[in-house]
Length: 246
Image (cartoon, rainbow, N blue to C red; front, side, top):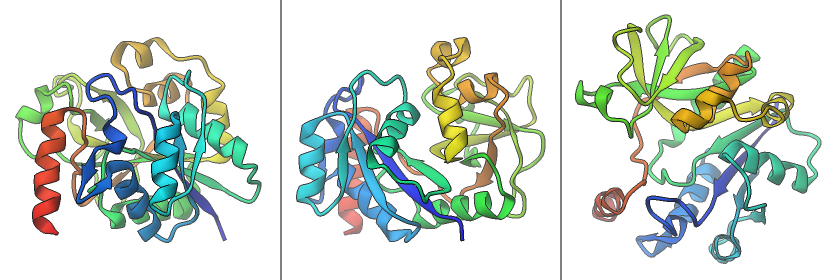
């Protein structure tokens, strides 16, 4: 049976909203909400790969597991690979990289992505959902993924490209990319040993490093689009939604 570990990269120094992992919703920090969502999947062990001691302490205080990583990483994938190596695990087939700023991500979408990877013996996978309105295409804060075919519950196609710009002049099947990744262990190791590609640096999209180096990325359809927390406005909006639901 294939085994997966979920690793959550987290750091305090986000440029647009410093300290966001420890911002609280319902008296629990964002990073702990994400940890709890990951645990609910029952996929496997969950560990936060933290850049800062404050995050590690807060996660452990709330019953989670965390490990300290270096503060010089260029991407979340680089960070979780260091965490994985520090954990000294040798019986894992897949590493799932769950973003630490999406506390309302759907548990079933995470489970579905893991199942798609295992069932298709895929190397590298991610999630996407339907574009809700045309304004999303021009919003540079929303990452778009372009595919050769329409995305459905029955397929797991390869991504053609990822973009912050509107790609509709070049591609037909465009979806809202959700920042969750899963890789075979050897593929993640291969990925982190590549230098950052020009496109990755230019567009601030780590997945372009994979495409630029010939690593294919499969895409599964997500039922819902989680609200990522990039700004104070995002945080306040999601806080209102989650606290109202509770």
